[in-house]
Image (tube, rainbow, N blue to C red):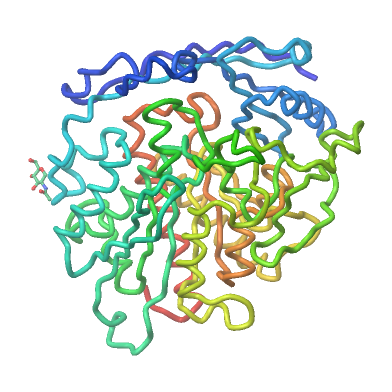
Length: 481
Ligand SMILES: *[C@@H]1O[C@H](CO)[C@@H](O)[C@H](O)[C@H]1NC(C)=O
């Protein structure tokens, strides 16, 4: 094993506009009584590179026992990123790792609320800064006012805390190109289920804006609307997203009250059809197919803690970072998204008839484009070759924009084997053949705390990735694009 002692001190985030230099010291909501607030001004991100999967299992086992916040696991080049504002537990100190100090960036005061000029993609300042949930919603509503003939606001249902989940359907309304009587294809683009992955939300908003930008503008994707309707859900975990703005920047579950005595908060939404808890790297899971959901599991039989098999059979701790709920679709937000998609595309035998042919789950971080399955690696999906062909092309398309590399592969081989991921459910149950998870920038320097100046470039390169997939699928189906 190579010892790495790379120390990267992250400087504060460069500000773009003068207005943004009016930064507040910390998060704007005064929550001084909240125990979580004080500790969240920054911490250390450590990358462990154990060299082998066995070593990785060991590090993860310790992380789990100490309920540490794992930011990323890579199985293809075994490494695990662990963030903590506190000291590293003794048990981990002996493992070689690199360090970055991650500071919670100061946020611009959201004074500008509602004052953006969205008539131009290139000239608006909206994509120069991060936006809290109410501004995300305002953006969607503003686009609908500007483009009433092309934008339908989606009300997807309520969250655990009672927020209405908004999305938007962008459609040209006109018949498919060249008078061909072919129906439009459908494409679903979803933002992050994990609240802290802000760049996935900003990218979904950027993409929606690019679809609506006049075809004469640089970056406009208006041409895609000749063939596609886009269903865009920029913030599928708004309760969690609000919490990342107000209290804990790196929160990632939803905000549902859970546990036997209602003593814990939050379900890891992207294990909803899944289990949870412990990712499995070495052996296939023994799977339980639930009535709803796909490969969701309440219990873990992961080999992470191979030495304590008995513990593996215990349900996940509802207070842990990994809690998947005690049944599939316990998270209201997940049910809302699944209902929306399956209502259009159906489930079971008739699934796939609704015209939605592609689904991309935007996430961060890691610069990876991943295809199903997540829950197992020993069998390719029947559409595996087509999926990978599109994905390799998409990775190249992404790189062509700003030179950022993306690794393409199966989710199970890039991250780890874990049942119940969103993409397994969408691929299998909603029968959407071209279903992917796209992990955006970066590769672990800023992690979830990217500079705001990257919002636009990430939006641009991801738009190219999504467009490539859209064009690939349309061609496969005999559409001219
Ligand atoms: C954006 O700003 C430039 C420079 O002011 C201007 O020439 C251009 O027309 C603007 N574009 C749009 C679409 O408003």
